[in-house]
Length: 219
Ligand code: FDM
Ligand code: MG
Image 1: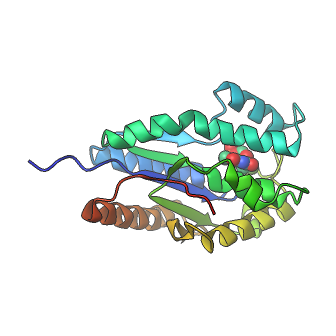
Image 2: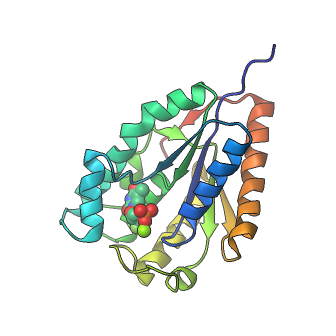
């Protein structure tokens, strides 16, 4: 009898208001309809102790140094690292709304001395590496016009533009081949189909190659 294929670890990334929450929910629903067991994660996970601090920082209720908040975001992922590996080993899927790519590019987009991409990425090395990262591509001109934009820290057009450049930069460096851009400007259904094509293709390749889950490597 063939053994059960391992699970898959899928991440959706993009600017604020690019449709990640909608699309991760749709992807999760579609996978469940195909009888996969799916854990839907969201980073930051605001429900844990580190997440409570992060949420207060984002809403402006507390102040933290740029280095400290960067490390909290990373810690908020490390809290989930073992769980992700266990789920995948058991044949289950993990779909995450943001991951360390946001961690690197948002912090680096601040332009703070000593908080460059290399420093920022170092604390992410060793985390479970996603099988594919779908980057929902809607520019800062598009997201700034969407409902709710501007409510939280970082939801500011100039920073969003630098974040978008940051994602492009990550696409051109080590493990950049994991990032796949999907046009996020159309309707929800259109975008869902594009996301699904990417995810299905990635899953098929993994099943064919038998490749295991990897970890984020150093640059
Ligand atoms: N963000 C998110 C970071 O700055 N670093 C991170 O590691 C992560 C995961 O937090 F502006 C930023 C991105 C966004 C904000 O995210 C909150 P959501 O997805 O809007 O809740
Ligand atoms: Mg947001």
